[in-house]
Image (cartoon, rainbow, N blue to C red; front, side, top):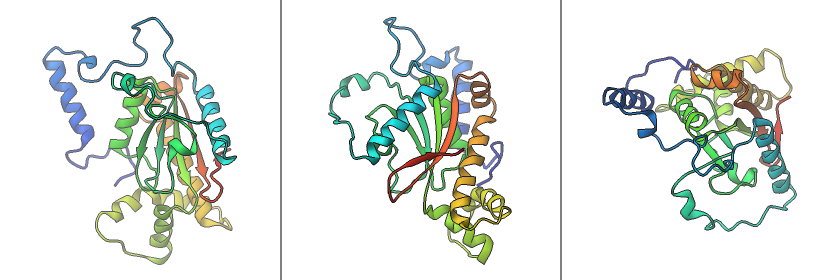
Length: 246
């Protein structure tokens, strides 16, 4: 797995999306014919639930996390609005999260169904398919905020450290995954931190925030114009608190 967003590793879902768009163009179809209506398209004239800026969306997530930590979560009827959600979705944030089973973005931010668009991969790093998913959330769902969600005691980052420091060998496709996390470990080691794992976890979040902010053509454009805010932080498994990177 290459850290570059432009590497060609053969047939991928992102490639499939491009192919589908190409077929649609040849057939004279508009993008809306491929994807559902965007959150920004007018219909009844009412503001969409996620018609807010990135700062406001982040405030909502942080307030939700505070409720989660203090065990004052909002009571939710998960069946409410189910029928309406079959027609559209208006998430207030897209979250690039680790696959770790102990990290549940909807719970950590105390959000309900349809509020958070989640992309997950062990090590919460940007890869082509994940990038395409986030582009979809921003372009077609009107998401105003993208969050890179790292977490304490991350096994993927810990494995990357063992590969670099101890020469550990991993089976299957794991070396490709670790390859994407290595730059964060190298950057953290250069600072000689007391807690290399914690520093590498934070560095991994910071590097991927930067990748998303500068990812052409969509996210970079949306971020530079202020239409989308990109933020990152680390979730503490022990106390449930999400802390933004400074």
